[in-house]
Length: 416
Image (cartoon, rainbow, N blue to C red; front, side):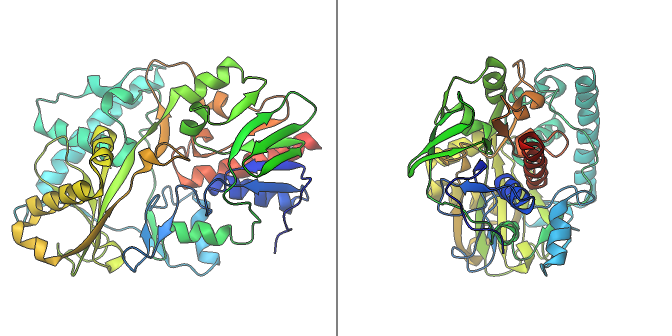
């Protein structure tokens, strides 16, 4: 059992997502007192498993444990009795009830690798250009690849993705957790004392320590670790006195939030007949061709992922319109009669979430700002952590965890 909350901590940690939980645990285990505060009424941030909507574990945020060879959550899951395994799902292309076979998928994968390699080489040269220049959108295969980049990978339109940001690397194998990734993170944070429903409004860092004004009162400490998304930090919902330096503000505004949402649809059966956890795609080769995870953990749940403008438009249209869109995609693949198997649906709206204002951050082309500037500490009092701060594991829960641990270690060394 970790130490209880203290009123005069050495360090205040803002945000109880994976980064904040990791930072708070690392501080406490090293004998540094901390106070973890969270604006939501729960921990976990963008990693949250809901069991109330469908009666089964349903990840409303992060779902896959990426980069399995270096992902610390896999070892934690195994050590704590969670059912985790490698994701062995296959990509399939469907149209009107017919599996089009491997040839369609191979065409898309080949073009995707060629385009990705060109973008990666441009990034290696230090170019900071939008990646839309590498696509010929008169070519249906290029359109299908562009749709994958937007809806499955980057949660942004091609013009909003920078070559400087693009990591064309072997991501390793993905793993999945039967109980849900959010359940796993919540278990990790179960013994970490946290003040929920506590919103930070202002941070005064002009003196020897810091004063943190919150909706529940003012706290004082030697240092603060900030883990909110760049979307929240750029929104100026948290005021700073003195003002942050230009380099820090530029970094917040350079790493803008993409919007990734999914239409979740529960069916009475495994409608694609592929077994649990596979990836059928509509074979329409249109730009609004989302990615789909079918029969998640064998529950009959399907999740259709949307990103960029489509995702934002569905947020504006509302949950019922989003579910209708998801069903229309399923019907394109399996035919109109499949609707009789439909039970109920749900749609996430991370772009409208007041505490993140998006899903995950990537660099906007032609903007000043680096990840080094994002995570740079200020005056040995302000420290920054989160998935957006990690160089090689950006936009992952693993990156958030590693960033939280590394930043806490930096604070420990600084406080001496």
